[in-house]
Image (cartoon, rainbow, N blue to C red; front, side):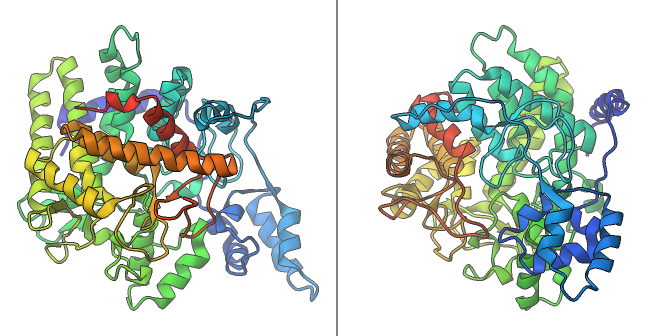
Length: 532
C-alpha cells in the first residue's frame, strides 16, 4: 500500500492536468461495431487482424451498423467492398525527408530515424493523439509502443536525438495523466493492458544526457509519473490481506507474505486485433473457462512475449496458456528497479523515511525473487507458478533480468552465465528459449531487447568476455541481414545462415525500431553505460 504522502502527490498531479484533457471514446472497435466487426475478422477480410482495427470509419459507428444491416440483405452483398466504402487507412503525417541509402548498417540506422517519426496530433479511429512526435517500431506497428520505446531511445541517445527522447517521455506523462498508466501503445484497444515497465529506465536514460547540469531535476520532473506507474502495478494489494485472495489484478500474495506481480489485462474477451486467432485458441482449448483463456492471451500480450512457451503448460501448445498463473521473473525485476528509482527520488527530496520505505520494499522483492525464482540445481532463474507453488520448467532469457537489475548474487550470476553460454548462445546470438514450437518468442528466434538485457546484465557482474561475445555475434547477425537485404528486421533466426526470423501471428516486420536502437547502442559501445 502506498504511503499517504505518496498518494497525495499523485492526486495533486492528476488533478492539475485533468481539466486540460479532452475525453475520448474508449470503446474498443469490436464493442462499437458488433456483428460487423465479428464478420470482418472471422472471414479474414484482411490477412492481418490489426489492419481492420486500425482503419478509420468514415461515419459514426451506429450509422455504419445501420447501413450494414440493410446492405447485407442484398444477395450480391460483398463484405470487403462494404468495408472499403466505409473505412479508410489513416497514416500519421510523416515529415518529408529524402532517404539516403547507406553503405553500412550503422549509417542506415541514423538515416532511418526520420522515416519512423510520426505526428499524431489528432485522434483518428482507434489511434489516440499524442502531443509530441514519436518513433514507431515500423511495419504494422505505427504507434508509440511502451517497451519498444526504451530500446528505440537507446539508439536515439547515441545519435544525439535527445529532443525526440524528451518528447516521447512527455507523451508517456500525458498518457499516465490521462489513463492512470502507460498502455501497450496509443490505441483505444490497448487501454486495458500495459507492457513491461521500462519507464524508470527511460527516466534514468534521460537523466544521463551528457552535459545535463542537474540530473536530479529530471527525476523530480518525472517523480509523480513514476508514482502513478507504481500505483497501477500494485492496484488491488489491499485485497490480498483477505484469505479469499491469492491474486487480483496484477498483484500476487507469495507464500512468504511478500507481494509480487504478474501480467494481466482488465478484460477477458478476444483481443480485437487478433479476434479470430483468440477465438480459435479458446475453442480448441480443453479449459471450460474460455474467459480465462482470453485473459491469459491478453496477459501474454501485455508481457510483450506474445507468444512463448514460457506461458504454456505444454510448451508446444498455445491452447494450454496460463500466463496469469505465473509470477514472471522479468516483470518483478523491472518493478524492483521502479521501487529503487522512487527511493532515489525521495532521497533527492530529502524524505529519508519514505526513501527507506521504498528501499525496504525493493529489497524484500529481490529476496522473494531469489527465494521463489532461483533454481539451484539448474543454476538459473525461472518464472514461478503460484497456483501449483512450483517454478515452471521453461528456461528463457527472462532468467537474465536478475543480473540486469543487480539482484542476483555473484554465484548465481556465474551459473546463469554458464547456462547462457552452454544452452542459449548460438552463432547469431542468444536464442529466446530452448523450445522450437513455431511461436515467435521461442527458439530459434533472437530479439534485440533481450540481447541488450543479457549484455548489460553480464557486464554488471564483470562477466565481460561472454557479454562481448554476445555483442559481437548479434551485431554480425544484424549486419548480415542488412548486407543481404538492405534493411533491419524485427527478429532474427540465430541458427540459420540467413538469420531471417519467423513464426508468430503475423509476417516478419521491417523497420525496425528496437533492432535499430540496440544495434546503434551496441555498435557505439553505449553498453559501457549499462548499470553497474
